[in-house]
Image 1 (cartoon, rainbow, N blue to C red):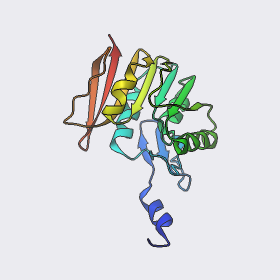
Image 2 (cartoon, rainbow, N blue to C red; image 1 turned 90 degrees about the vertical axis):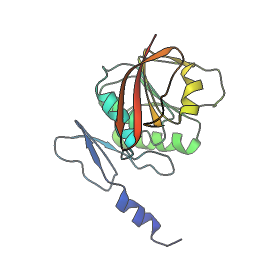
Image 3 (spheres, one colour; image 1 turned 135 degrees about the vertical axis):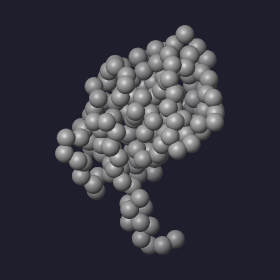
Amino acid sequence: MADDWADRWRAFHRGVRLGPLWVGPPWEAAPAGALPVVIDPGRAFGTGAHPTTRLCLELLLEQPPGALVDVGCGSGVLAIAAAKLGHGPVVALDVDPAAVAATAANAERNGVRLDVRLVAPAGEERWSGELALANIAPEVVRPLARRLDVERVVASGHLAGDALELDGFRRAGRRERDGWAAELFVRG
């Protein structure tokens, strides 16, 4: 492995603009007038550049502010963007201690308050709010959907050719980008 891998990795981590949001690394400056979401992923997934993250953010921008749960928070990019857009309280959940640490550090860096929790993947705990975000693989989100007491779910992490179904929810919208998809589900 080359000694400069960390610097070479930084060259690929660039900010992206989505509506009023700019999601980018701490070594880049947000454009004037943008609502910055500064993310250093560390060892967690999520820089804002992946199509599934961008799709989730696009659908999030269309949702009214309210109590929100980010399931599989990774670096915290979605939870932090939600908090900056006026959602609250925001609960960020992950099974990976590195993700929980990255989310907490990024929340502090962005000056937002999140309730960041390490959770067991096979527990019985339920999470409530108006909206849940789940940018995780379909085989993970399907069983977790039964533990969500929410009105709406934005789910991504699957290919455009896949049709995600969640028990207790009906599809109300879908977006695709670069071969990936995100769905908006509503209770019922």
